[in-house]
Image (tube, rainbow over the protein chains, first blue to last red):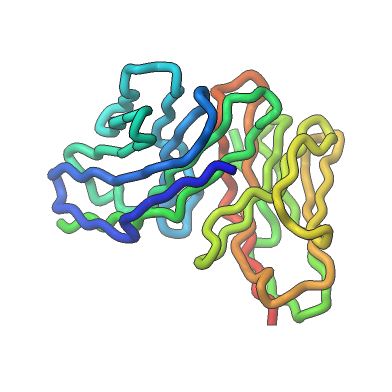
Length: 117
Length: 114
């Protein structure tokens, strides 16, 4: 079974600075998908960024980028120019590549990010 | 376009009772997934429905069940409630043929079991 581990329960960052959230995972599969989801307080969880394991290039979405290290099974999220609206719980998630996996994602325990003005 | 709607948002039950939660996906989305979120266990996959058929099931006891209707709306039911069932139940929908893993979540139904 796959496992996803987020070793930082809480992180804080000063507004406008950069922060990196860590995620490691364990799988015996060679092809899969990785995601970062954001859950703001009392609001819906939304997808921040996704990475396909067969792609070597790290995904980027505006101020959000990942550092995908397949051999090390590491998938960190970098948030640049942090904004107050970035404050949220961030979840790392894994989905195996098999077509019948559907929307069955395995989530990490989450990292609470606080942004200081 | 309206987002994923979950009802009720909050509910309190006592042990032994049963509960039914409802989820209306985004219009056009045919896949609906359910997740349980607790402080101790985090986010755990319950089950997924696509075109009224259960496509995947997580590792939960048979007290947890679900179904999907022809209009893609979904319900989940928990029977014989236990204290440990207290959680935020999240529903998520996705578009067939959309980006893999891109789920659109509702705000959740917060269940408290006393």
